[in-house]
Amino acid sequence: MSNDRSLSLAEIERRIAIVRDNIRQLVEQAAGFSGAEDEERNADRLAQQNEELERLSKQRDALLRNSNDRSS
Image: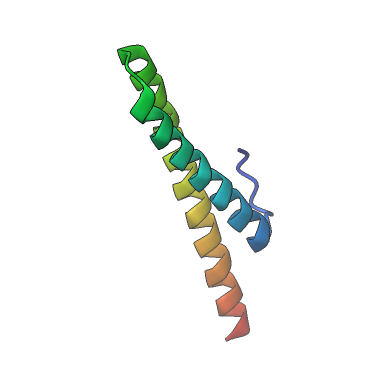
């Protein structure tokens, strides 16, 4: 996903929901993996999705903070 600072709150929330669903699916897939290579690949994908979730959450929080500051 891009590092686009002009996303709307609704778009950020939509992306967060997608990433959370991706994480859920990866965790479910991990239960069925048996090989070390599969487990490593899944761990990498999970780490990537968790980083994206953190980035989007920070972006959402900053957007909310800015909108609250403007309304004060």
